[in-house]
Length: 238
Ligand code: TMP
Image (cartoon, rainbow, N blue to C red; front, side, top):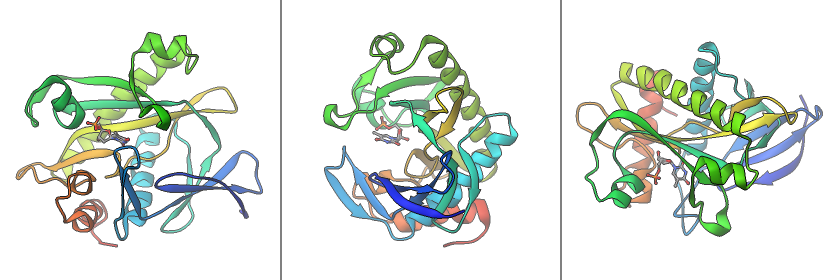
């Protein structure tokens, strides 16, 4: 597989073309941003942790019947994935109140819901990723009704698989964000990443935060937190 020109640089990843028009290489950076890029920093080793953790979870999801963009890990920071057309929706599943949910509805963090919730944000930096409902997403032509239904089913299924896995490493899956893409303008796969950047992960006993909230909230200890997740999954630190 030959790596070719850079196609795109996002806040946390770069994307490169390859000699196969259906495949791209994703390269994970240590750069961290929050609040729509207003807060910037780096978390040493984050790119390695996110690449390896995301690939591990995507493979687990593939085995449970979820189609994903993952093809193969190339090295510590780079992965070969299917080229997709990203659907401009951030799909957020929550099991426990935290973050913008707690703020919006004026409730404490840490309330365990009777059943998981789903919400969508319109992925648009200029607008600050506003919340959007299914009907608005269809009206704006971001996705069709069948796609929204499929994405919703996939997201709740992914939640069950991830929640059960994280429980085995003594981590509570509080909430997370998913992105989906169309392969060759047709079927939908899970894309982007699943990592401590895109999930809230709390120690099951102490409720210590093991995710990007440590950076967002200036708590310190973010390198250690990312490494702790790596250690619990792989038995090694990066
Ligand atoms: P929120 O509580 O700030 O809405 O975040 C919900 C989840 O989505 C949390 O696990 C962090 C993740 N997330 C992202 O991955 N990217 C984002 O841009 C935002 C705002 C949240």
